[in-house]
Length: 414
Image (cartoon, rainbow, N blue to C red; front, top):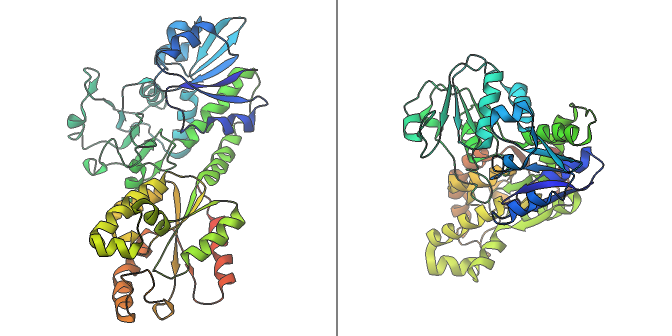
């Protein structure tokens, strides 16, 4: 059985491991250019396919039968080949409806949908099915029924935001489709993007204590519905939560922050080996990028030059999955660094008493005990602010390592 996913850019896709976990077929990732797409659809050399950006609407003319749900939405994301004839549906509807119902009650609420593509049409149908009150549709350079994002800023009564665009998706992880400061009545954020695991829009919601959910659960939900459509066999819907949690944990990074010489690198290497994860030391990555040692960078470009490279490295490392990342001591001085690292990462503060920290070495800002104390007074509150958990490293190394592994394993991840 030849099954897979078509779309234009699929390097970010998590669909393969999801399908292969719940079905007994091999699932292929098949990126198609705009030129390749028509020939692929005309040849029909597949048994079943999922369809993603930008082909959810473009694929419809090639289908022989489109069910009522997909026809009403005006977008298709699942097609099966039955004797050379193509049958189509929209399982994104099932996935998004499942995700919203599992976390929010939007009945009677004012909802803003960002985007005008196939997924936005799905979101509109889901909102209607869930009896949302007022539904505002927003897009760039579109007329009725859409309003512009400038007009959206004036809609201060919005209670739920649904992002159906690719804004915030890898590789442009620092982008956000709207600013939640516009919406003082916001009660929840729903983002269909799942890579990174938490989008910048969801990260802002977290900072404002607004409940949020990113798109991984929708992806799992629509995949279960697609497997049912492809195989004709009923699937166990309770696996959606299990799949989501498992994949979330498998893709998440472990990010270690703390003072210079607090033990981040030593603990990180040992933890990575035990967890079978990759390891990255931010200071090493900075030196590789600059082609210079950290003291040389400080000498030639000052702290500001160093911090600029550090921020670039933060964003590069933030795009990784399943990596233990040992950060430089001052990474918390720039909030954007911590935003980036938190999108795919669980952040642990490695806390060590000042009198146990080392001075000198390749740490230009740790020149003396007095300098360390001043640094600690500034940074300790920031480490606490940006961390998900804290591990003390003031005594036996093995004990600190066990604690680090324990907090990682206790994290539900989702």
